[in-house]
Image 1: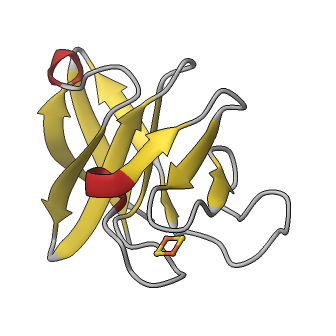
Image 2: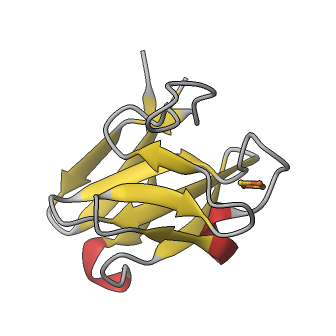
Length: 104
Ligand code: FES
């Protein structure tokens, strides 16, 4: 079962902009999306770029790595449309205005 770690207040996250948080030693990038929030490992599986630094959300609602344009589904974390590889996706929870990331 996940432990929940508070990372930010929801209002601190700008729309469609990634922000890196260190969660129990793991770099996690959180994006505010059109529908809420999404959190992934902050390392592109291609060559390790920080998605907080070079990632962006495209018009198709995907997370795109700015180094070589690999795109990932915000829902699954998997490369779209290829299906693999996948980013590790973290569960999120909001209590009041505080955003929590779930870790194992
Ligand atoms: S490092 Fe992300 S696409 Fe190459």
